[in-house]
Amino acid sequence: HDLIVDGRRLAAPEGVHIVAVGKAAAAMTFGALAALGGAVISGVIVTKDGHVDHSLPERIQVFEAAHPIPDQRGVDATQAVLRSLRTLSPGVAVLALISGGGSALLEAPREGLTLNDFQQTTAALLRAGAPIDALNAVRAPLSQVKAGGLRQAASDHPLSPIHISEPT
Image 1 (cartoon, helix red, strand yellow):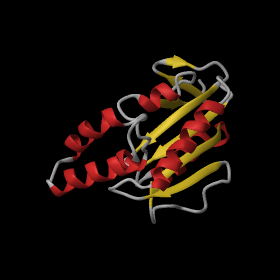
Image 2 (image 1 turned 90 degrees about the vertical axis):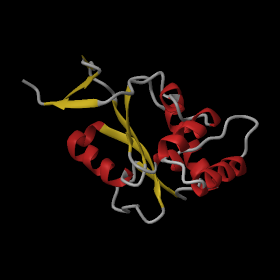
Image 3 (image 1 turned 45 degrees about the horizontal axis):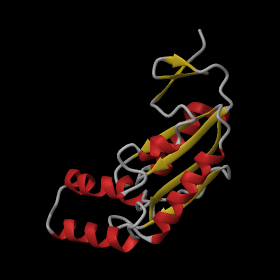
């Protein structure tokens, strides 16, 4: 298979690292593994409690965390995602798979903020009946990984929608 990222063919990438976040993280990862086969060399998924499929290969780290209010497990899992991106070889492509719930599960408070700040803010917005786009608009500037932060953390790697094409 050739990997096409943003319309550009990747010349012999060293492999693909998956970052999957959300309630469908495990299912999306299985789909990527089926499509990419042995090209997937590693990955980290963060999903809601009870949404893990323990038959994922060992090369995929799996974390569960709370949703809709973030918890310390989500912060720890987010740190694992960021560490995984920092340790990749520059020739590895990153495939980000994000589904519903991802905004609560992937969390790294900016300096000066605490997890408790996030929990209280999220709880207050939920009690007020705020829709998800309002929740995300408030949480984005408070987070290291929202509003492009995850992409910036992977700036040394191709991180875009990846389309698979059969060799011609």
